[in-house]
Amino acid sequence: MKPVEIYTSPLCGYCHAAKRLLNEKNVNFSEIDVLSQPERKAEMISRANGRRTVPQIFVGDTHVGGFDDLNALERAGKLDALLAAE
Image (cartoon, rainbow, N blue to C red; front, side, top):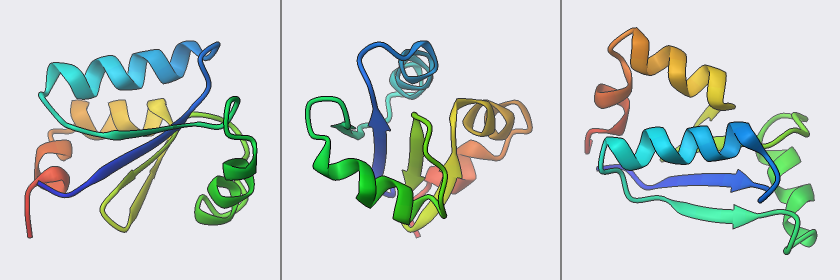
């Protein structure tokens, strides 16, 4: 399985929804809390092509986007293929 990283904030409902979806799929992920690590927010913005909101989700080198994007991949049946090991 490709590594998954998610930039979050503890007050963000969409962040909790994204983590819940990943947990339901038994996906291990690294969480980067931009509230407690504000220096990582600039890194997130750069990696996310200027997007400033959380969550920002990355699967391997692929920028998925936010929760709505992650959920759309799941509903379309494309998330498992993206997560699969190369």
